[in-house]
Amino acid sequence: VSAVNTAPSKGIYLMLSAEKSSLGDEGYELNIEDNLITLSALKPAGLFRGIQTLRQLLPAKIEMAVLQAGPWEIGTGTISDSPEYAYRGAMLDVARHFFGVADVKHFIDQIAYYKFNVLHLGLTNDQGWRIEIKSWPKLTTYGGSTQVGGGKGGFYTQEQFKDIVKYAQERYITIVPEIDMPGHTNAALASYPELNCNGKQPTLYTGTNVGFSTFCMNNEKVYKFIDDVMRELSAISPGPYIHIGGDESHSTKKEDYIPFMNRVQEIVAAHRKKVIGWDEIASSTLKPTTVAQIWGNVKNAQATVNQGSKVLMSPAARAYIDMKYDSTTKLGLKWAGYIEVDKAYTWDPATYTPGVTRGNIIGIETTLWSETISTRAQIDFLTFPRLPGYGEIGWSAASARNWDTYKLRLAKHGARFKAMGINYYPSKLVPWETK
Ligand code: TNX
Image (cartoon, rainbow, N blue to C red):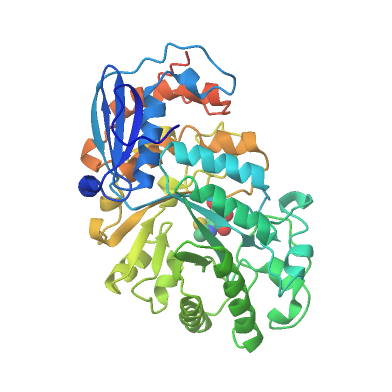
């Protein structure tokens, strides 16, 4: 790569241009001629997204880890491209099973290839607390020491977390860290029993039930705890959002839940971050900047938009990639139904929920909960080939999407998955081309 003052006559030329303002922060224009490829964008993020398109236009063997011989042929033409939604996310649950820094970076590379711009990390849950909080050290030394099934668990030091953040930033991906509360908090309660109303220390939990733990709502120490966690987390999270969970708090009284969520929104705001929460938070008074992540409840979605707040679309029946593909899939859950590759693709966020329209939606997010997966190959299997479809739902206009043509384009990515060593599910619905 070298810097130039004028356009070269051959090669691949990357150009930032203020004239491209209509393309927005992530849009790009790709002009491929016989001798010269010109990629132009308003912002570096746009160049990065355009490079992913260029990679996908080149032969699949470009993705192999070992140097390959050319010819590196590519069709000529012009592409002018920009995203439909500003938020295009993937969520990885590192609490139920812990995934180390290398696995997270690998996942970041995979989502970057399909132009995602958010990685939401589920950092805490009943089974484990995965992010170092220096003022409450037992959260990780004790609360992070196990995982589903009773294995070793683990956590990120703040330095490691910063390294993940930087790696993501280099790919124009923002990390959204989630601290789930007031339920899904057994690991915190086991580490600091004073956060529990009865003050008793629960044992560490390695099963997969939900809804049995809650912070004590009327204890000021809980709010001090949350403030400390948000202070330390904000300091290492440059992105605009912190996710506060709020889902499945079945052990919290509703009359406690609402004021709790109101107060936690204020705590997060005091650290100059905006809140995302699972759709249950719609029962509280939402700040205009608070986003509800809709995982299925239509009433919660409507309550959010009626309050003037925005939603992030993650309907479990379509967007949960921890769901099995069909009855023969060994990994995954099925409470939201089976999600074959076509079902994952053939929905439109803007029309999916009655009463919620395009203008209410910041974007979409696919979620990978990790109750049943603990290895990179298992992440791959549930993620591919569904991930590119969510990338396209987030990026392309609904009018430009169609399963019959998409499946042919996806089929060609079989060879790319192979070149990248991805352990994908070879769905029978897709006419795979693996050469
Ligand atoms: C529901 S969706 C959960 C998670 C589980 C997931 C499994 C949501 C906000 N909560 O606690 O891991 O189902 O699919």
